[in-house]
Image 1 (cartoon, rainbow over the protein chains, first blue to last red):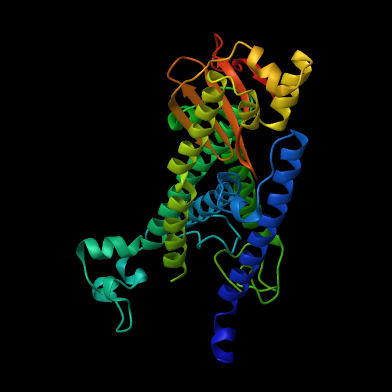
Image 2: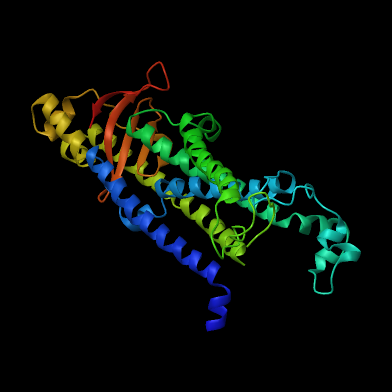
Length: 224
Length: 134
C-alpha cells in the first residue's frame, strides 16, 4: 500500500489538490452567487442546487476546456516545434514524427511494447495518436459543455432583465462566450511559452521539467 | 483510468445539469396560469400570492392600495394558457397563448412572478415593456 502510494504520488496528490480546489470553488462560488442575487433582490440558491446548476458548470468548464486545449496543443506542437536550450523541446534534429525504429513500433517493437504498437494498420494509427486524441476529445467535450452551461447562465441573466433568450448558435456569436473562452486560452498559452523559455536559463534541481542544474543553456531536450 | 473516470463523470454531469427542466417549466407555467386565472375570477389575494415580494410591493406603490385590491384594477390579461415555456437556472419566461408574457424567478417558495403583462419591444436586445415589474 505504502509502495503504491509512493509510486503513484504525483497522480494522487494532484487528484487531492483538484478535489480540494473544486470543493473550495463550489463554496466560494455559491457564496458569491448568493451575494449577487441578494444585491439584485433575487432569491438565493442552496449549495446542493448550486453545484448542479449551469452557474457553477460554466465556471468549471471554461477552465477545464482551456487546460485540455493547452496540453493537446503542447503534445501536438512539440512533435514539430523546437526551442533551443529548452527541456520542453526535442533535440534540434529530431523534429517530426520520427522513424519506426526510434518510436519502437511494428518490427522495431520490444517484447513488452503495448500490443497496438506491435501491430500495423488502423490500430497502430489510433494508438500512435491516442494521447492527443483523448486529450483533444476531452477539450472539445468540455468546450461544448462550457457553451451549453454558458448559454443557460447568459439566458438566465437576460430573463432577469425581461429580455428574449438566445439560441445555442446565437450564443456562439456573443461576446460572453468568447470572453470566457479567450480569457482562459491566453493564460494557458502564456504559461506554456514562458515555461519553454524560462527552462532554458533556470533550473529546478531534481525536477524532470528542468535540465540538470549544471547543463549548459544551449543543450536542448535533456531532462534532469 | 483517470481519463475513463473523467469521461464517466462528464457523461453523468451533463444530463444531470439538464435534468428536471421539463418539470420546472411545468411548475413555472402552472404559477403563471394560476395568476391569470385568479385575475379572471376576481380573486386579488390569490393573484398577489403568485407575485414576488418586489412585484407585489411595486403594485402597492404604483396604485397606493393593498396588492389584492390594486392588482384587480390594472390592465392585466385575465385567464390565459402558457404557450411558450422556457427555464434557465432560476429564471423563467412564460408566453401566454393570448399574446403577452410573464417573467418568473425561482426561490425557496417556488416560482414567483417578477414581471407580468410584458410585450416585446422593437429590438430583441431591449427589455420587454411590462405592466408590472418587480
